[in-house]
Image 1 (cartoon, helix red, strand yellow):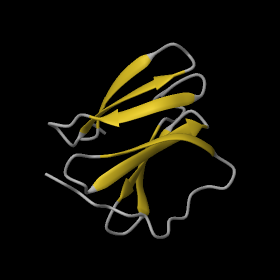
Image 2 (tube, one colour):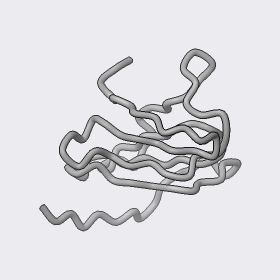
Image 3 (tube, one colour):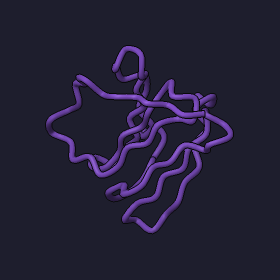
Image 4 (cartoon, one colour):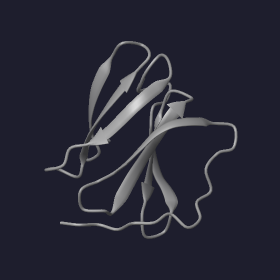
Length: 95
């Protein structure tokens, strides 16, 4: 499957430092991450933030995130790796 997505306009938080971005294999969503230590999931059709992984209740990482990657076979699963020497697995279906 060949997706040719383009980001024409998106409102990212200007206070954040983004180090990585990845699209899901189905092209419906993408993830941005960096500093602060959370993952921001966006809807491709609307270019709007859908959810953020990382809060006081769910600790994402304890330092900068340098990589994020969707599982190519399962668009609701992704991985992240950070300067905190942790690789984490996330399932977007879990609340």
